[in-house]
Length: 351
Ligand SMILES: CC1(C)S[C@@H]2[C@H](NC(=O)CCCC[C@H](NC(=O)C[NH3+])C(=O)[O-])C(=O)N2[C@H]1C(=O)[O-]
Image 1 (cartoon, protein in one colour):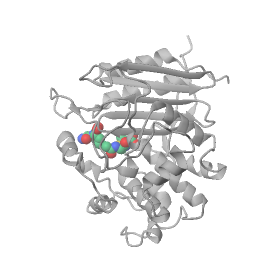
Image 2 (cartoon, rainbow, N blue to C red):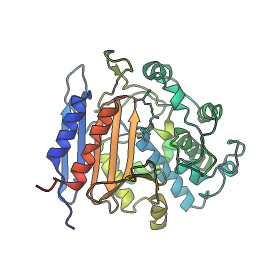
Image 3 (cartoon, helix red, strand yellow):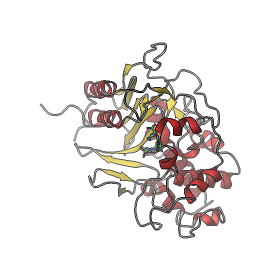
Image 4 (tube, rainbow, N blue to C red):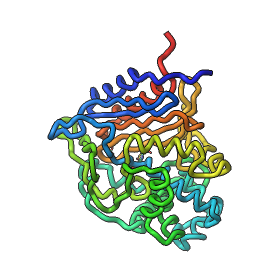
């Protein structure tokens, strides 16, 4: 079937819906066979009123997990570790269960609890308590291991940031360098992602950027400007900064096989369902969404204080979309922002 043109009016409507539900601003960038299409809405800075800018940098949250996965799978390709070996073989004594394998981390099937649930139970106090803190990986893993495991290893999918903190530990142990070096050398530089960085524990977003605004739990309380933070509570699970254009370049290059071998891409895109809808799946550090028009898109989502992100590409890498809203802790915004995917990849509904 012919590739449908993106319905940019539909994309714009989803951005407007995000604003109508509390986002100060939103933006989306589609890259496809007929070139680039962008839409923006609202402001990137509530103080100055500066309009949202498609070139603005922002925090991508868990989209970082796909960057970390690419680095780790390159190390697997280089023979530095094996997917089905115990994590403890490479990080002796780290985990209390030798049955937890590297693959379990990348598929969220390790059973390691997600320490952020307790950390952010009270949204604003939780954020304020950690926004300037610097954690070691070991401290974060310690927070998780203080809580009961959620499943026996490999038995079921249970999303946990802890998995990708351990992925960061593996990368640093095997390369002998901070993860920032691996991101830069293996992804940012080769793909010329000049708007993408990993600056942990620096709290700033350099250059032209969107400010992020966290919705408080109590209705009527003011938005919290959450732009500056270390994101040390997430690091290799959530601390990358990027732009819509760079994320489209990244997902497209990934799908086109510019970062990993065909065999490794097959492994990465081998998925299991994450919910009962049978339209949402997870592979290795990668989500698959099956859209209403039958198109499957691969990428990741992100939720970090002040920013919601969707970044997905078709399996052939020919079409990519990144959509961002500069708010969080407002689920309806995240949901309506997701409407950009159907509009962009399925096009206008038949009349
Ligand atoms: C699975 C998710 C949704 S959560 C996970 C990760 N983000 C976090 O773990 C942060 C959670 C707290 C964020 C905060 N919420 C609260 O504090 C609520 N009390 C807010 O909305 O800013 C990320 O990113 N992933 C998303 C993903 O992968 O899409």
